[in-house]
Length: 494
Image 1 (tube, helix red, strand yellow):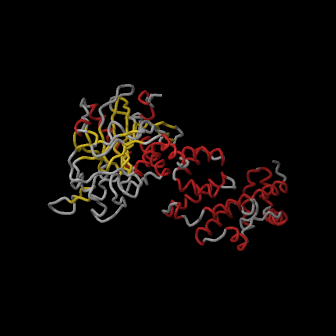
Image 2 (cartoon, rainbow, N blue to C red):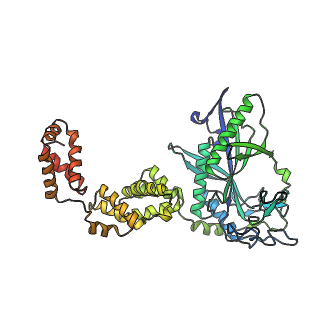
Image 3 (tube, rainbow, N blue to C red):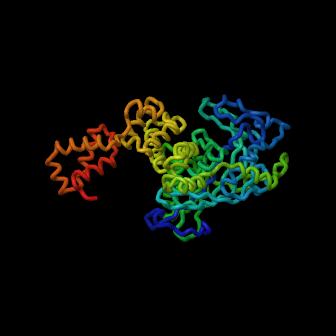
């Protein structure tokens, strides 16, 4: 279906004073390419060096310096295009985008305009309510990043740090297919997951590796698109949501007052939670694009692309489908597990050869719950995949109950060690010896004759007896065996 003809969803409409409005969102994501050196120079891309430490003569735009394309950056752009199910253009052209700014020493940015390296693709986004939306990708092109102006280091001068100047960026432009701030946040999250799986961008928004320009407009449902405003350089998913919410309501208020929206570039002020005007929006002709005379058109052949495609990792959508099929997981659980590549790998190490549903339950609920509480990620988990796998195995074999497993998890988290050995050494095995369980049950029944009469009239009280027997056996009795023997002794029918 043509996304622009996507019918308005009543749940996503914004209520104004004079009726409902629909918000239309398109995104331009700037993703820093994972590579050792810059797009057209051999300078390092390492984050956090001293100012102007990673700057070559090319980056500083010294006279006579010529750009030389970094092949690894080209490969990373193609890999990303393949991951976005997009058309790869075998010939593309680098253009000069002319504008003057102190942190752009050349006076122009080398970018791509009419002939980008990657054409149309799509990203499938799963929403929390179970809806799946398709977001069209318009294009992906390669370009240089600019440096950074520092205005707070000196009372009367601005400083410039060119470490970032010339670092390769992929600009990933979506179609105007998003209809709410929640969709926009979910889209950026999914796109970042794909980039991380591919290893083409680390997606670290705090370091500026991933930034978003957000285009927002509003319209009455069914009407043509309204005038859009672009919110520049939003660097967190939460801020993207806040910026859209504020900007949509700002535009609605103006239109309902009989005003018009000026096409402009705006900034999001995270402290105030509002957008403010930065400059009127430039059009392409303002930049005087023309092909860069120092760079030949970029050409490669189909076998080059096919070779890169063959070595792509399994991507989140494929991995999710496989987890559902191979491990019997729900779509929700599979989605949680594939959100980060490290998490998916950890789960598979736990689940391999064991019960997938039990493994997922332990990874998502017990492990993630504890990691979140302690502010840790999977890479720093005190419980390894092997240790957690052993706990899942012991449950599956009936050696330990779910309750003992939680105690065992606590011991492994705090002290480490081999779960099987801990169970042996500390006598944590669940009691499956029916004679021992019967003895415990007999003792509970003998001590509580009044409860015995009550349970016969009200079988739901059986749980009270189960609890007493589990307490008497230190939680080690096999719960199923306790249930079965109790029912037989108390004469409760199935």
